[in-house]
Amino acid sequence: MWWFLFRVVVLFCILLPIATVFAQKSMVFIPSKKMGYTPKIIGIDFKELTIGTNKLNCWWIPAKAEKVKENVKTVIFCHGNAGNISNRLDTVNFYHNVMDCNLMIFDYSGYGKSGGKVGEEACYKDSQEVYDYVVKSLNIDPKNILIHGRSLGGAVAVDLVVNKKCAGLVMESTFTSVPDMADDMVPIFPIQWFVSIDFDSLDKVDKLKVPVLLIHSKGDEVIPYKMGEALFKKAKKPKFWLEISGDHNSGWIESQKVYSKGMKDFFEAL
Image (spheres, rainbow, N blue to C red):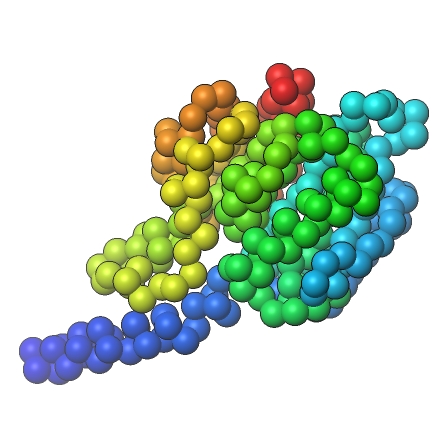
């Protein structure tokens, strides 16, 4: 029995790193090419755009005509690791009907109708090309731009804000780094040694020069609450914390009253 258990452990220690090396991209990136509904299904007008090297599929949703002012906020939204922008109509509705903002939401390379291949560096480049389009082609002043990243999008967003000028950053339900996530998932084995995808937000968050709002739920079953706390602790002032309730994907919807107030307070503080 002991010899059998020993062989099982040895086999586990050999196969797990191999599986991690070869399967990590498919574990981190879960894109869908199937597009569902567009904002029109919820009565919101939008313009579909193709931007950048990999012909990224983007939706530009202007603020309501009667709400448009010279200093209206424009949000660039970086979504999570699964699906595509057609799965984010709740977010489109929130920014259009609750926050009264312009919204640019886009799919990373390899997601939805966007060309190219998925990857960490691709995500960074994609977000910068979308930002450049918003500033140069849509003539939006960086002082009126906010970057919002949810889940994996938080790692994309913090990298963008470190490299580009904007008014503020929202990091929602996001992790410190992919290796940290691997360590949390398999604490009995140093699997993080074999992870080559970093998305190291903890290393970048203290380099921010704009206000940042960190949002997390203690009920998040995917990304530990402690990671949100670690990011907040390392971020420099001005920084703001918003605790919501509910699970990883729908917590912000379940906490709509608290979430909306927290977001409006942050936007007004900028």
